[in-house]
Image (tube, rainbow, N blue to C red; front, side, top):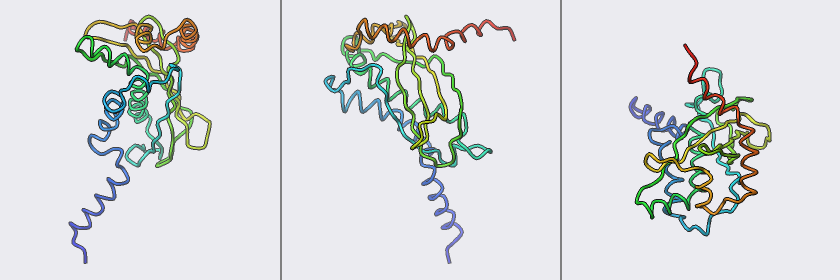
Length: 216
């Protein structure tokens, strides 16, 4: 007969096996995987795609530890998934700028997140497979905007839609998205016009900045 300690060990292994996505430091591993891949392993600029508006797809499942009392993926966990999906997109698109800036200045530029707004449409059940489709939609003089869409496998309907904005920083200096695109060889008047049209679609995210002055 198995000892109580053996049973506990087996149950613990099974528990973490079905919740591997949420073990300590698993998020960090997924986050830095893209950074290491694009900036060290596959750093050849010739491998860069020429379309700044291309879609990147990241797939995952929602283990039990990501689900809330309602029996579906918790709203809060969408944001940790977005971190991974957006990083994979941003480092891929701006690889050339990141590498060249580091070579020229000795400093890595960084891309802090400025805001994210999400709309939840449909639930994601435990262990259901889903994808996050992310793409750059536009920019202004300071911010670059990304739209992300959560979809269940085999369904074109959105479970959630998110808009995020990023800023490019080199030390305390802000790099305009237009300049970052030029460094990557991705800017043209046609690209700028399409980016301007995309920015108009997310103008509401910029308008939220006015709430900083709201009195509480």
